[in-house]
Image (cartoon, rainbow over all chains, first blue to last red; front, side, top):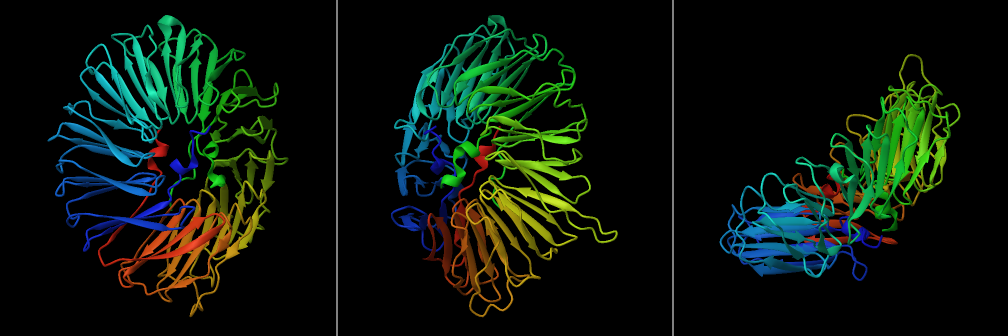
Length: 305
Length: 313
């Protein structure tokens, strides 16, 4: 579970934005120099700047200066890039993911935490109906027949995938935690991208018009009744995992943290999938599902006072 | 930062209860195992309740008058604390879960790291004054307290025992349990207290210069998963607690103002003053703590990292 580096999940930095002296200064508890403070100059005061914090990143969008700034606690450094931005350009900061769209440049910028640099995709005109999405470690940018998975931890943050049809409202697109899940019922494909591997996983599956699915921090599952299977995805793996079992479109599908559960009352089975082990277990000894209930774990006690 | 290994952050357990089949089955993702309770041992009903954290789950069984617990770390069910009532409110942090008994006098906690149930000493009732136990749960720590009786019990998954603290609880009291750290401070006391996975005991603040009574009603508080910070504007003393060493730092005396910003997140806590022209930062860095000053000016904005993105589900 080396992918789950604690440094990505425990905030260790403070940002000071200086109003009268256009300067951003970040302080981080780092081994070499505790509370090392490192600053970056802005050209002008930041009254129109947008400041955002993620878990281990700070982002400043500076339209007046045509600059983007990013600080990475992991790298203990700042990075800036010239970018033509307006205050209306859409952006999203979640966990360790930061995605910003420049409508003037037709570019999407993403901040790479590992390399502490801004990376971008060019010649992309976003459709407001299909915005960028972000979990805490994985994101997705959509345009036409192209999907770009985003990871802040990989050397190349953006990973392109061409799909058969243009993104449309019949597709399901989700980004939660370290997982992106795209379901295309028309073409019978499931696409998944995760924070720790630079590739799209795309198993074929004979899909229902309204596929049943669940997604959480490190896990995603889609039931495929017509194929008698459940497609499972782990944030740590480079392939999909298939559970061959009978399921119905009315079955209940759940996910939380590293666990996914599919309860099939009609087939008297409970399928459990582990994102850690990339394997599953089936419970079939329960004969009566009347009143059956499920409790999943939650992330508790991490919040600030 | 070993205490907040992501294995204790992301949930890996689930509980399935089937009243008709008289079964409860736990699933643990670390080993991909479905682990049922022994046959007939947990005849749950529709009224029974359950709760799960990252590595722990508990479920009431009113028929047996017990609370059963599951540890994903130990890969086993625990058949319950002897005498535990199944009536009450369940609670869970990341690694510890339990129940506040319905009579309000006792809390029972199950530690998934060592498969132990630990009960608080019952609070001796005084006439008709009800025992009003409440609970705050962090990833590795749990705080149970009674406002009416001025009693606090703290435990961590490391210490695995309740530590009692008698302290007046009032409207000015601040209590928190976050990550590895518990903070308890009230104007009625001359010290503030903190508890952590490292200390396993209540640690009171070090006495600072010109600090006869601390904290007071003007005091400001902040706590992250590994640090806590208290600012006392009346004396100018800053008190920082490092949860990974379980110690309070030597107080730092500075000039404070009414518009000072205080905050904390993860390993960092800070007071950004408007009068001192400086920010005083306190941070955890195992095995120590550090004070740091940064020159600031009125209007400067402070921002911390946050864990909001992790909790999406």
